[in-house]
Structures are given as C-alpha cells and as structure tokens.
Image (cartoon, rainbow, N blue to C red; front, side):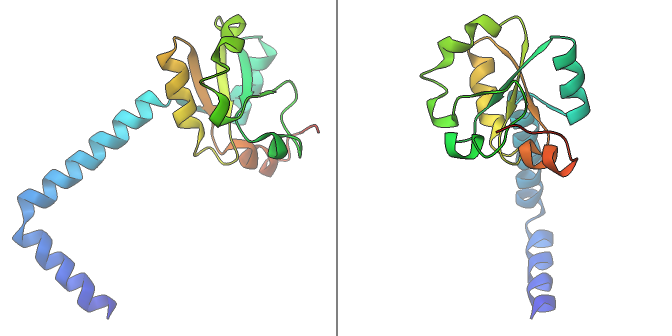
Length: 141
C-alpha cells in the first residue's frame, strides 16, 4: 500500500515538476522568512551567559498555571495571549535582549515576532522549558 502511494506521488512529481518545484521553493522561502521574524534560537548556555552579563531579560509566555509548576530563575510571566496588552510593562527592558521561553520552543517564535515589531530585540530559548529541564538545569516554583 505504501509503495503504491509512493509510486503515485513520484509519478505526480515527475509529471508536474514545475508545480512541485515551485511548491518546494515557496515552502523554503516561508521557513526562512518565519525564522528571521521569530528571532534567533539560543541554547541554555547562551541564555545563561547573557543573563550573567546582564544583557538579557527572560519572558516566560506559558499560562500562569504552567509557569507556577516551575520556571527559570528571574523570569517574568506574561502569557502569550496577554502579550500585546502588557507590552508596555516590558519597556524598561528595551535595552536588553528579551529571551522568550515557552513550553517546547514552538510558540516563542510568534511572541518574538510581536516583540520585534514593537521595537524590542528578541530571541527564543531553543527547546523551551522542556529543553531546559532535560539538561537538568534549575527551575523555581
């Protein structure tokens, strides 16, 4: 069954190579554009170094309930759905890079794009709080 589906897929691609090539180019361009808008990914090591040099502010965008189960020391919680309304609270940190932390690193990109649109320098923690915990790094409640 899988081999038959794969054969049909390959037949479609070869018969419609211009359409298939255009689709692939558009997907690649979309990925590149989204990664540029979403800020760069930082490792936990890079985050720690920036915080130690007082160059970063950690913004945790998870819901309050998730934040209360454990978060990075010194992080501030503004949930993703409240970010636009509470953007003014971040003005005092405009001279620093705002590092956005979410559960897995997947939702932080949208928040980074919003922050960048508002004139902030933003980056995201690669892997989110899940990645942080998987490296056995400390969290507080």
